[in-house]
Length: 419
Image (cartoon, rainbow, N blue to C red; front, side):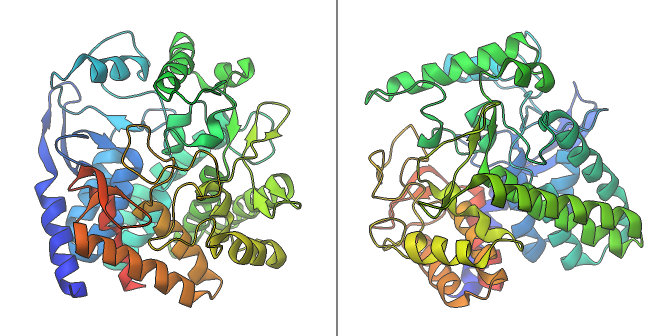
């Protein structure tokens, strides 16, 4: 399949997944592509950011509408929710339960959740600006993005170490990734218990009204996640570059300093010299969560990563055929981990390969000149789509697609092929 055919199929998918209408409760129009019509029919934060990146190549006007819809639900303090329920539909009790537990208010018809997702927003705005050179769009969106990243700094960094915390595994976007197992006291092989453990964390958060500062004081789930913070550092660099375009030199300098401070904190606190990996930190004592997952590779994105650490990540782990270098890389958990399962399962992020994490790692590899490795991951990502279509995730041995079909963020292959 040619790259042009891939683009055509990606645009067709995002148009098919498009939700356009007027929300009575919000008194706003919305225009976005949902992740998957049957499985994920609402607007998700980082999914929309990924859709905006793809659409910046295919239909920049729709890309701007996508992100404008997302940001339109920004709260006065700067918070932007991880899911917006623009139009209420009645679903199975299981879905109504998670709507309830993840929302700030005590209602089974919530308007949005009280949680965040990985802060990709500024990266997407930069991609859209690069495609459109639309300064009016930039002037409208950048102050809102700035307010959002200020909210993260003020509400999610209680110890002032420049690393932001997540308050539930779902905020990482990686749902049931095994590096969270220890925190929620999951040691069983019976995965059905895992969701219950997560719901307990959510319900505790709900009792606190999803007030980040209060929750982090309680310390029942406080994770400085390596992936989330690597994306955070990269996004702060995007904001700095965008403020420079608008001739806001002092703001640009401030955000660049913050980005460097975040990257340095990841290097100083999260790198494990013995294992040659980066580990997320848990709790006020900042205990390293020593489970190898795709998260451990994410500092490849950082400009400031130590060269020796970068080489170890790539040579000892990414290119290791017993870990991440499988026929269709990169698995979310290396096959050397006991929790590795490459097959379709409800408890996701425990083995299969995903296009969005591939996109980030490829972005980082190209920054550091490892274009041959980036090209291979891109080629194999394209091969999965050619063989099976746009799925939520893929088997790292066969390339077979699993989970939700017609899945929006797998269209990131478009951006991967352009770079």
